[in-house]
Length: 290
Image (tube, rainbow, N blue to C red):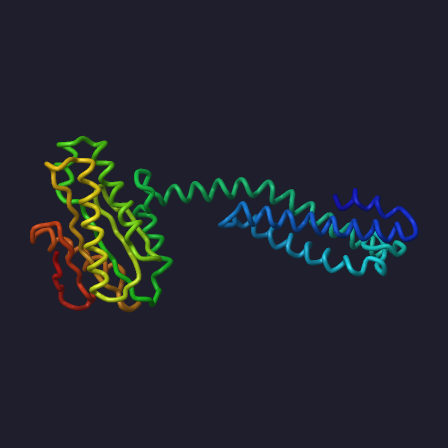
């Protein structure tokens, strides 16, 4: 496009200056529009998109800076007589832009497909929550995070009996209900994973033990309320929840998970349909039930 617009600079006099000015504006606008379209259509950019993004920023800024100096710059940048350096620089810039854009157009679809494949490998197909692999990746990324967090392990009580009585289709609806309820109630930011058939993990910022318990109770109560619509009044659908609190990065994630698992099994032994939280992974287990 830059080369084709250069033909407009072949006129002389004031029209020549005006045409050169318009050409510079058009090229600047073209790059700005391409930049806007790339930003609008991509939320998480691939490597090729980032390269293209940075190139378009540079070229948009450069062409915008050229516009006010068109009357004094040599062609093809401006309206003055052509010089060897201006032609060389102009052609060099054009070749770089065309080459990078062409390579990006080849690489972007491949990188997007690879990113989609990676995302699918981290996603539970039934609920759309993260799977075990996603949890492992999340822990790797957040291993040294110093912010206090709450980890809840959620398990659907007597899930096999629900499947046997109502069928697997209803069982799937019950599993999906856990994800839906947690998505609605968990404070932001939070992360949610399905790590087994009817077992889930939720991670969210810690404020107080009371807030963590309140969140767990809300999840448990709302889950029972929604699931009753699927299975009917004659079958009780409940959640048992075990939790642990990580107050510092000094607490290993495996220790935190073990504490939450221990709390979950305690909740199961004490009658299910309750939440028990260990306030600190290094402290004795403290029971807080419904």
